[in-house]
Length: 245
Ligand code: MLT
Image 1: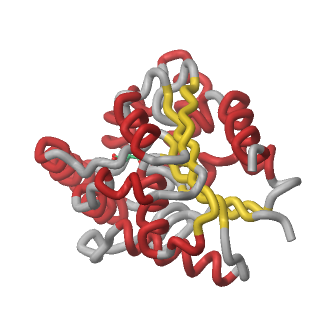
Image 2 (image 1 turned 90 degrees about the vertical axis):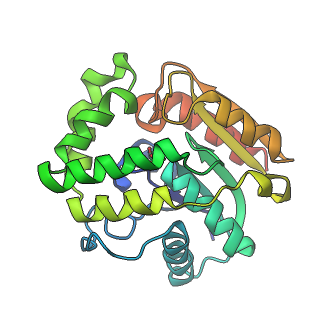
Image 3 (image 1 turned 90 degrees about the horizontal axis):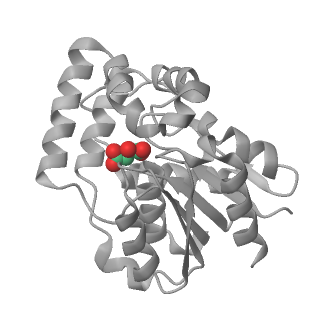
């Protein structure tokens, strides 16, 4: 049986953000790239749904069980990285390797939490497009905006406002994982973008230096979505990591 790669998408996107990786890797690997609970093609969540990174991790564990997979390489971007941490914490036996892309180990600051509250208010009254307007200049580097803006807007629009509001609260309440990093024994690849201001390079260094068996790759000319922005560089880094064992 082929080795399983589990891809966990970022906020407020859906599984199609991994399309270049699925194209390149599906031949050699068993790839699972779900839409997360409430996102994409899934039934929207009510905005007051109880939701946490652990709930998404439970869903990921259930998906692996449904496919009879006992261990996977877990590749998460940003919110998907927070979920990968939660999966490792709750179900360490399921995680063969970690790929932590454009993410951070720290929890939200008080300022970040207040900003999410503000964003939830705007999404509730104006719709998801306000989040697209606000986030796009930080999701994509200027040189990638023209090629990818419409596609990323479509991804954001695939999600209901109510799911986005519930997820903003879950993001704001996520755990700080910094004091756990030294316990992560699985091979780990940390991927960062040289122009990412959402999960800046300094956060990637915290993870790469805190996790004993981690490597850091910095993708050039990428903001927050290097799997889409620079698929060749991203896939080369991922493939090298997978072939290193
Ligand atoms: C993401 O890309 O998943 C989000 O930017 C995560 C966050 O806002 O912390």
